[in-house]
Amino acid sequence: MRYVSSFRNTFSRVAPGALAGLLAAFAALGAAELAAGAVRPAAGPVAVVGGAVVDLAPPTVKDFAVRTFGEDDKDALRIGILSLLAVSAAVLGVLSLRHPRAGAAGVLLFGAVGAAAALSRPDAAGLGDALPSLAGAAAGAAALRFLIARTTGAPPDQPAGSGPGGRDRRGFLTAAAATAGAAASAGALGRLLAARNGQDATASRNALVLPRPASPAPPVPAGAQLRVPGISPFTTPNRDFYRVDTALVVPRIDAAAWRLRIHGGGVARPRTLTLGDLLARPLVERDITLTCVSNEVGGPYTGTARWLGVPLADLLREAGVRPPSRGGRYDQLVARSADGMTLGSPVEELMDGRDAMLAVGMNGEPLPFDHGFPVRMLVPGLYGYVSACKWITDIELTSFDAYDPYWVRRGWARRAPVKTQSRIDTPKPFARPAAGPVTVAGVAWAQRRGITRVEVRVDDGPWQDADLAAPTGADTWRQWTYRWEASPGGHTLTVRATDGTGRVQTEERTRTAPDGASGRHSVFVTVPQTTGPAPSQAGPGAPPQTTDVLTNSH
Ligand SMILES: Nc1nc2c(c(=O)[nH]1)N[C@H]1C(S)=C(S)[C@@H](COP(=O)(O)O)O[C@H]1N2
Ligand SMILES: [Mo]
Image (cartoon, rainbow, N blue to C red; front, side, top):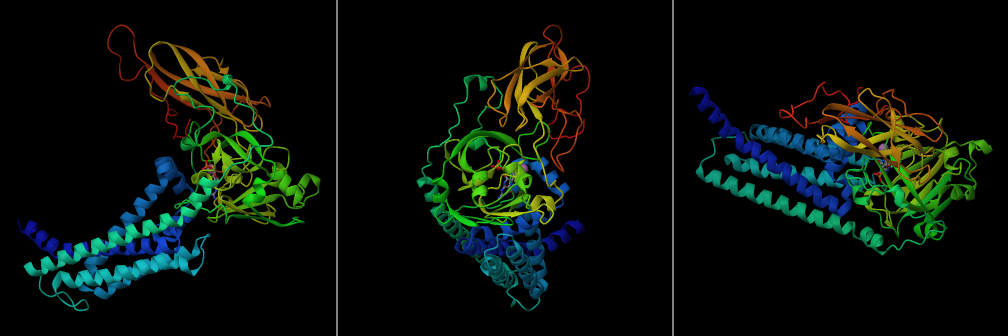
């Protein structure tokens, strides 16, 4: 009983402080959001601190986050930051009951961290980027002082006197409600301003009419798009296309204001291009499969779209660039984006005749903002992190010896051609298909080399040829199906592909880092007994380790 009542006493003394701290944090975020909406949405404290965390996190932590949260990793990060802020705010609030100055100092310290993060972002637009964090800290400190004063009725810079009485409590609750209301209004206003900020970009995207390609892609043959339930469609709709980037706030660029600078070593004729300049050039249209180096065996980070763009090799040639095989001294092209990302591609590959392009269109529409509007780079055969710069604004010729771009500095390979891979889309892991004919189906890819054969193995049986969909070129994935006579019990289905050079997809299992996962995708399914007793939960033989697409052990 004594414990309970002393707990209750402590709680009633401490709770108003914690609440004051939480509300002060809420006020800080509201004010910061308002300032960010006015200055630059990407300079908001949660965005800049999140960005700094993404940049500083060791690859293993990031790998874990992507594996655990997938494309929700950004929300997970945001929730993490806000939770940490909430706990710190509550602690600071309690501290402020006795030491108001220390509480205020703590709030300002958070503001300083935010401001420092804002100014050190690679896309920082100037000192103004510190404003949201500083405004937030000022509002937070003021709100804390205001609320703490009303927890006790004592002046803020004197230690708390008597506990909160009835009238004091009503005063505190009124003040708390007022603070919450003001914070919410500021936040809402900030969001409104931020949305207005992006309006020019949205309007410019809506107004953009893509020219017809000088070199159109042929229609996708009917035989290349199999109608199997559960298989990845040949063309991935934009809304389903995977998204991988470090942008916590998606850049919204006004196409009219967009510029692309081409410069650097060996660039005899540096240039700055507008979108109009690009669109006035002959455009090519191509079906290309884009794959992320972080895609685990069997993973989802790959997709095929019909891209429209300007051939990059022509632009480079006009600028005076020569590939190393023709005497060029500069072997790396570094692409920079509006959000400060850097990606490095080998000049030789960009100019070897493949359809490397500055893409402006994706599946018949301007690039979605998520996928790089107004212009992104795209290079068939290279993983996205060494080629597919979204929101591109700058192209600099340099050498691999002289400069390491963002991901390379974090331990990923300088050069990363796409590895031959295949994936079982259906049946899904742990499915329970009925005995009899079962359609096993999926996709296989080996950009630049193409897919010539796909085989499926059931348990430890022989490799059997799958049926391939009609070919569409070396740069796209290829669908496949295999008709399996399923017998009752637990079974492991495994797939492997052969590329256009005749090489069979290796079974050697590697992690995604440093240059892409290798190994074969397996799916474990259970075929229930058709006769006799009810099917057991798992068939004979325990499920192997490889059924979950996220695990990497074989
Ligand atoms: N500006 C910018 N471009 C970027 C990235 C990024 O983080 N920022 N990520 C790259 C990576 S790792 C991949 S796999 C592709 C993904 O393109 P998508 O999101 O359109 O599928 O974009 C590339 N381009
Ligand atoms: Mo990627």
